[in-house]
Image 1 (cartoon, rainbow, N blue to C red):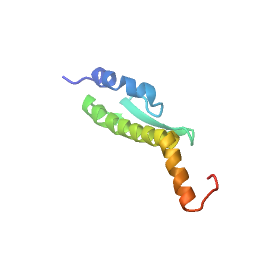
Image 2 (cartoon, helix red, strand yellow):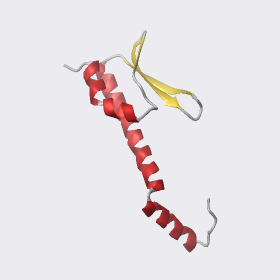
Image 3 (tube, helix red, strand yellow):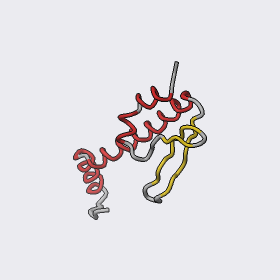
Length: 97
């Protein structure tokens, strides 16, 4: 039987790393709010009336987190910097934007 505690245990490591999402107990049940740090406010939420809803909501959060991390890592990777530099040089664009 799927229970909330099991779903939270499975996603525990992810939720520790992605500070945009957390699981809170409200008067309406468990809720997964999303924090927008640039606007300093909540950006959205998913009320989880059942463990199945929570199980389905968290992978969407996790997928977005992985996409963000991949973009963040590729921007900072040496290979990406070399590729960007080559493109700028090929186009005659030597400014640092």
